[in-house]
Image (cartoon, rainbow, N blue to C red; front, top):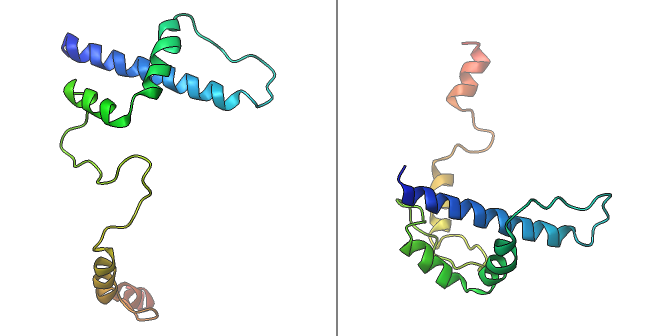
Length: 121
């Protein structure tokens, strides 16, 4: 592994860790607990600077930065919808379902496997 890829991996792991810790502490803030949550040593810069800045940067800018740094997956097509947009079935979904139901056996119809099981073979 090259030093650049190691640095990118370290950057990603640290950023994910501090973003996750920030969210978990916010979620648990109003919940009763018996002990204070554990706070590891270090990471003050990440918690006080990175997390608030990351939350204010729009998704399009984050996406461009990750692409420029080569921190995105390769070999797959990104989803056509934007973050926050609800899922919708593909436009040709009705045609696909109809084609599948036309080739599927009818309810109650004997399949070759069911006939073999009946005969005991």
